[in-house]
Length: 468
Ligand SMILES: *Cc1c(COP(=O)(O)O)cnc(C)c1O
Image 1: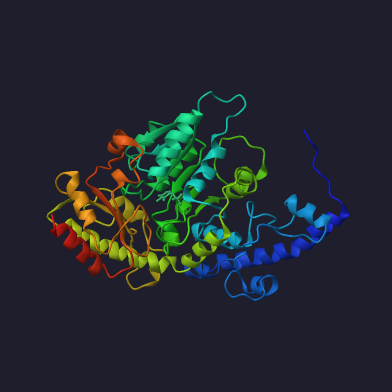
Image 2: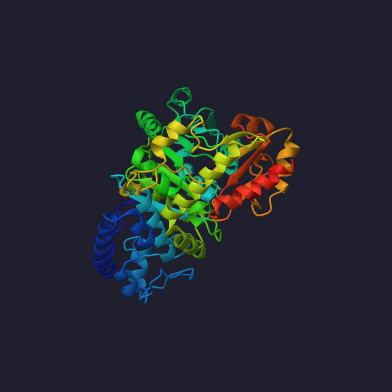
């Protein structure tokens, strides 16, 4: 055991000075927490004081491209590197631009959740999933030989690969797949003493799977483990899992959050504290998991976000709520139209009353702060949907190839409508059997509806389907 380090008076002078800044930031945080979702999305913790005192009055958060920060003397350097004062030191660990983005995301995910949250932004969504899950999968002294985690099988293709290849095959950590995540019994039958966490993607990409997140979080907590939710397709504008009891939320910022499509990024947001059985004597591990990740494993493993990507995310995020409202309404209209088309035999969209998980999704997928309007709080289901084209897989390819305005790309969450065939793209690597398990047949076209006028999207679909 090493004893706690002691610091010289010179170092402590910087710690003392930092108190003023910390108090100022705490006050800004308290003020912002009382504000509404749109206000947080627009401002975050980049206050007038922050602009005037530290950023030359810039109205918009500056992009700090510098890889590192300079210090006045050795005492300040020591204080900074011991994390005794707020600092950013080196962009792999922290960066001012990334810091502003992290706070917006922490505040939005924790909006009216009655819980404090922290956030760590990563280079990609996959990086966020790795950063969120790996520290929970460490082998414990005197622990069992084989540990496991339980995940819904309807996950993003990259997540499936990370879980089945990187974790299961390479590291011997068992991933137990739940095929019917909306059925709590399926989860219950897979959990045991050696389960480290439950993992759910909702709504899932592309299958539109969904779970009762509150019941799932309760189940996880009854086993002393955290519930992790990938809420990329919902964004905090439509679903905030922490408010329903989830411990950790992961996002691909690449998608609807950075709808303009200029950046790849990810985020891990955790509530304070998380539920876990993992023994880790670092005080932040349980109390502020995202910060723990940021200051330790993330520092050592290096999945930091590029500041330029962070500023793109921050900029697109300001109008998240109104954007998710528009694209969700557009998607609803397109899904309803497709459902009536004679060459389409199945449409999966949470917003369709005929969809088997509509009732469940209706309880959770609500446009934040929409209760102010005359109609009360409204349901919105996001802009991702899928449809299946009649006949052999060639028909789906023909329709797909016929799109004139809709882009063919393995992308989603865009301000522009984008479509893909998951069986030959995002879900290609996982093989036939896994695709069958996840219900991703080659007839399925995934469509993410953008902010164009929905009639024009429908017209494009109409001509493409008409060519069959
Ligand atoms: C795209 C995506 C990811 C991975 O994010 P990247 O930013 O591409 O690494 C994870 N989960 C979901 C639901 C996604 O759509």
